[in-house]
Length: 371
Ligand code: ATP
Picture 1 (cartoon, rainbow, N blue to C red):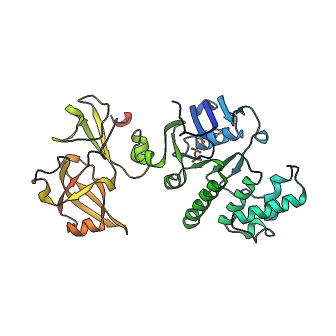
Picture 2: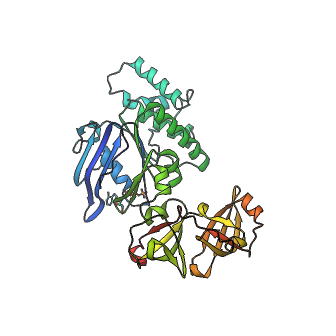
Picture 3: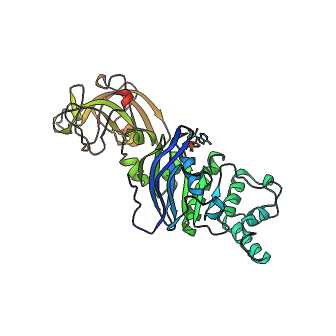
């Protein structure tokens, strides 16, 4: 499957890349293209091959098979030192015995620049990452977030064509992480540097990436913009990995509807044959609550009566657990607005009607283990 980027100048092209560790295949036939200036996140569960792919791009681990082209040049067999990138790791990796200035200057010292040029560039970089007065300190005297800013300054010091970020935020506490992700994104936009970031944090990927590459077991499951990945997941793995997703066992009936017990629902079109089992899936925020009479009023046929078993106040909305014997043991989770809960006077134990909007109800193949 060729993963084409949106229109733009092609910068990084990975073709049919395989990586084996002994008999274990960590990457299986990865093909991916990334445009100049794009911010791409590799996202997936632990062990899916994200870091291995990043390391193959950097030349830190060589692929078993396949090619990596950077800026129209085949770099597949070049060592890291002959490739054009800057890299930031999770564990800052600053030299503890060097001052912040010296840490940043490290990569510049072999670039043939004069001492005074290097000093100017270091101070420029310190300003760029918002730490103009910290140059004389040592890494241990800075907070984790500050150290990661310095690692970033060091990575971009030589103006590389490619910035690689390997879980750069995961060692930081939640508040600093959110703050720094905005800063990194802003800096990346300002510099226009093509960036690839590894993360297992879906929120981070949704917030930062122009495109997300969702990986699982060494293969790419889907490549798309954050909204595509969230709203139009290609399969149940992606649907389930990103955000909350209700899943109901169903069967495909005539006209492509999904039947759950005797009730059938219209859904987003799919390619299944009649009679096939399928998973009906809908996000909690897409379920619409209605008053009980709504069903009798001849309203939407994608409605069903449910019992509100539990509700939890989550600040900006109510998370509700809903059941109906047709759903078997699976409960539905629905996120209702504070206004809707007030208007419909919803409380635990009440019955209500919910609508599963046709354009939000998806159908997926049943995963093999569950089929
Ligand atoms: P995480 O989020 O946990 O870092 P990841 O998606 O980055 O996971 P990788 O580090 O790329 O995963 O590893 C992919 C698979 O390859 C894992 O099963 C891992 O155990 C295996 N692997 C990685 N490096 C080696 C190695 N040097 N030798 C043997 N197996 C390895």
